Image 1 (spheres, rainbow, N blue to C red):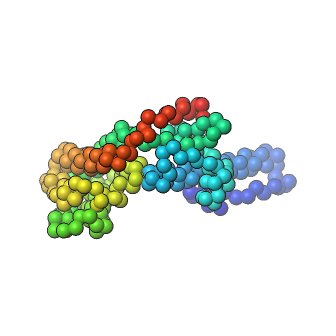
Image 2 (cartoon, helix red, strand yellow):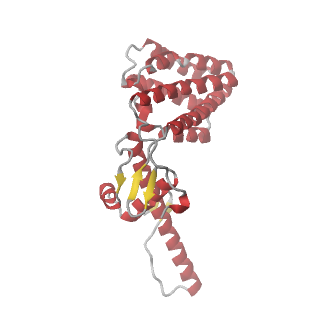
Image 3 (spheres, rainbow, N blue to C red):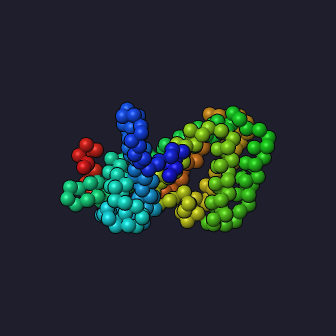
Length: 266
């Protein structure tokens, strides 16, 4: 079985191998087996984290090993590893003799996540300003013009145009590590807000008119200006998100007990 470029094979016992070679083979086998379990645990953790962020799993919900393993069609071991990892990361709390429970998403954590996202996106815009050309600017202007003309910004098409524009900036920036950080932050935004913008009051105006000034700075090669305006652009959407969640009483469970230190999880 191939796992992330590594091939994990079944154990082959060979009495013809010298003792040292046989022990080395056994060591490699168990290392590969451990890696496979670790990767499975990470994959399961990502699935559970996505359920928490989407609201499918609510704050305070108990997470049981056996039902989760059955639902995800995996053994209990990677589920337990996943929950322990999520406990170390602060997504769930492990209570002795009671299992795992989802902890609230903190308001300040959402603001911090957006700050990191805005920072990465601002730097991507700055890089794009140093690498733009007439062809790439034409693409940005075309997409921006479509956003200006679009009447219904409460639609999937509005989201798609927005995504195309930002993807074009990312392509211009040619900074894969920065993009990785931006994408990591985006995935941590709760309730999949990035795919629900069109339903949030105030977002239509930002989507219609919020990109032109950034494109101006990119076209003129003003990296500092592009960085600042793109950061502000994302912070504006952060304000919309927090205000929206405030209205939903999303933080009402925030006073629940915090997760214990990692060394107490077991």
